[in-house]
Amino acid sequence: MARILVLGAGFAGLWAAIGAARQRDELGKSRHDAEILVIDRNPYHNIRVRNYEVDLSEAAIPLAELLDPIDVDHRVAEVSSIEPATQEVIIATSHGQETLHYDRLVLTLGSELVRPAIPGLAANSFDVDTYEAAARLNNHLAALGRQVPSPQRATIVVVGAGFTGIEVATEMPAKCANAGVSDPRIILVDPNPVVGATIGDHGRPVISEALASLAVETRLGVRISAVDARGVTLNSGEFIPAQTVVWCAGMAANPLAATLAGEHDRLGRIDVDSFMRAKGLSNVFAAGDIASCVVDGTHATVMSCQFARPMGRFAGHNVVADLFGQPMLPLVIDWYVTVLDLGGWGALYTVGWDRQVHATGAAAKVTKQTINHKRIYPPRNGSQRALFDAAAPTIQAPPVTRTTSKS
Ligand SMILES: Cc1cc2nc3c(=O)[nH]c(=O)nc-3n(C[C@H](O)[C@H](O)[C@H](O)COP(=O)(O)OP(=O)(O)OC[C@H]3O[C@@H](n4cnc5c(N)ncnc54)[C@H](O)[C@@H]3O)c2cc1C
Image (cartoon, rainbow, N blue to C red; front, side):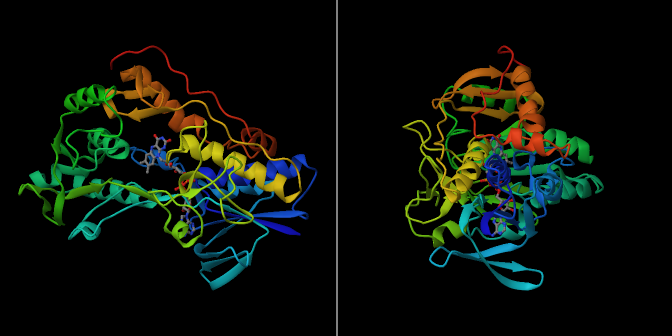
């Protein structure tokens, strides 16, 4: 029996596993011909894009619910090393270290928030990178809600005014209200001179309007030089008293990518071809944030679930096709959109690589909520057919929205 090992059960890994099981079934094969084994450090699939939200109750879906109906095995373990020369992966489990052989590997270990060595940052900051971290932030806010009001208690510093930082800052009024933290003061800090430097000129006025309407302050062109339990010191010399600092600045590919041969981009991602085969590595496929793939002849994927999900579906389909000597399918995606949550103000929906504004405010918010709560969810009725249909190696149309309207 052959073994396909899928490392990571995020957007790319989950959909690679289901896509592989689908193609195994299409070829009339079963687990006796090819075992599909998913390894993740958690027993759940995190709807990671929702980690900034107030309500996290549906953001972690048990893997058993999704993988048991389709005969995909899954184990909770930490991947500690990958050995392509011997086709082995070393994992750490609660019982100790184990070596797993593979015939084909699908690398979907995602990305991680980068925390620079700023004094006090690691010990005194929160983030929303993982479900666990997001839940920790919500628990901290709930604990603040039970404390005596003070400026430190009410002040939330969000560091990094990119996509995640903006979503965290604009959701924070609702998070604070939910936690009983009254009159919050929210401050968004970024070393760039503008908010949303990567989002571009078209959408920036929309973001500024939302921040102003939600009374989110900014400190731009400055860096954090130290953090302690009392607050944050900026390199401008300003000290902001704050009991909550949320670090949202900078992502990089999972550090295990750096241990592998082949091309890596500036984010540490592995170069893959249009079939999701890792360049320079035999029998290794990669998808999601750990991989970079040119999808339309010009543009490489960006770290996003928008790309991670189809990359996963195609990697899953192709790894089984490759194992059984069948033709593989190239991934081609000819559209790119971004839908940025702006909390109680609404959202911003842009289209194209130059991010032209398509919809704003309440109309875009409906689209955002449909994406976060429906579009990116796997079927949860335990139906093998529904899971296989959702994992077909096809490209979804862009999310629909109503007209442009302000909130
Ligand atoms: C707050 C937030 C908001 C976001 N909003 C958007 C958005 O609006 N739109 C969008 O397209 N994208 C968004 N993203 C980005 C999106 O979540 C990622 O691009 C996506 O999760 C990538 O999927 P992935 O499967 O590659 O990685 P992940 O989803 O990170 O999955 C990686 C998996 O590997 C596991 N893992 C990692 N290392 C190990 C190890 N050593 N051993 C065992 N298991 C391991 C992890 O537990 C995880 O389950 C957002 C991200 C965040 C954090």
